[in-house]
Length: 174
Image 1 (cartoon, rainbow, N blue to C red):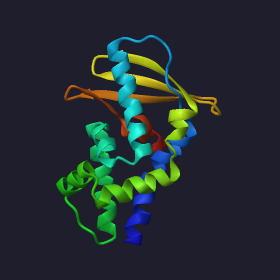
Image 2: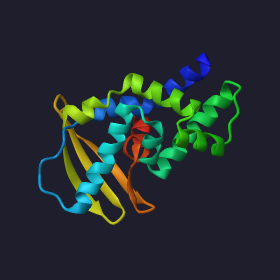
Image 3: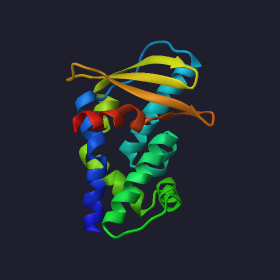
Image 4: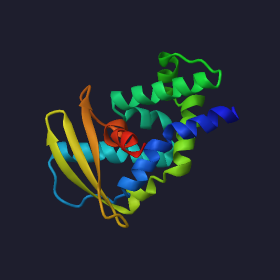
């Protein structure tokens, strides 16, 4: 179990490093917004609130399919290196229900990322909404540069793309 926990920590390190360097948390937006804009902002905020509450099924539900697939594949490959075999379907179900793999993953993630930085110490503003894509700008009070979160509309709901937002930074940081 200890090896799996260590692996899971490494599986999220790249995303966490990118998140901490790119952004700092935000406080709520105070401008008057369209209903669609409010829906986009609420979707992004909802993921960070679910992180704070450690509501793992809610986090999973708020993420894009690309992010979920990347997480499942990363955990599946890492677990395989430690002698634990899971199918993508098993891990997807585990993450959707907040099972032991999800708990290990998100506990490791939240050991190094504090969602209060985004929720309470940052300014939020809407970037743009174009078709099924949207951006949310988060300006952390101690950061020079904002983080630009990418959201996608999937199955009628806005979902946060952690992979779409921070994944490319993994390649830059290598």
